[in-house]
Image 1 (cartoon, rainbow, N blue to C red):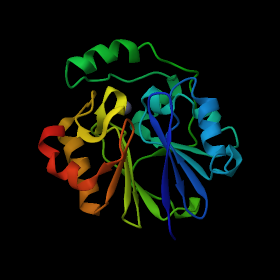
Image 2 (image 1 turned 30 degrees about the horizontal axis):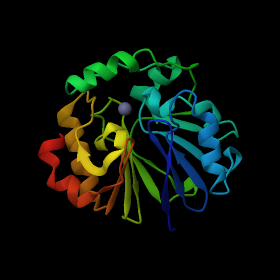
Image 3 (image 1 turned 60 degrees about the vertical axis):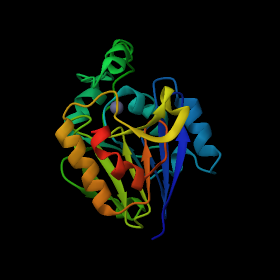
Length: 227
Ligand SMILES: [Zn+2]
């Protein structure tokens, strides 16, 4: 089964279409991104009705905020069980900053919220995506948040790691392909282990929630600097 990853840039974060036998959407932008998300799907000839699954890589509101629009066609929504409380409440979790910029952003992020959403699937272990039409796997890694997941495709070319690392400065507008430590990480050792797990899978391209895409060789070279 061949698969392709298509980034859908939203207001401050990226969602992704994973195009296999059926399309899977990974992440769902910020509150207010719904129209932009649906328009992004439409440019690829897809409506929310066509999605077989909506995967939320973690529970931060800049990745879950437009989940209602993403799921408006009836696709089930999956999120790691440890991050489900954030989604149910429509708020962020503790948001542990990795530096002063993260501390400043936290003031904004803690105010961001949306009507809570009840996911159909709360994930514990790894989960294959074959039944949703994609040759790949959701793998729990923690790190950024306790319930963070990555998407590893069987093709091996692409991986989606969302916020385990970010790409570039100013929300990815400057040097988007430059791997940098994310502004928030709840468990830095787990975050590093997660990235090592992804690199062991052997991807060429690593897709991130802000900026990117990143060359896997650059992520490996800068692993000490970004974890
Ligand atoms: Zn995040």
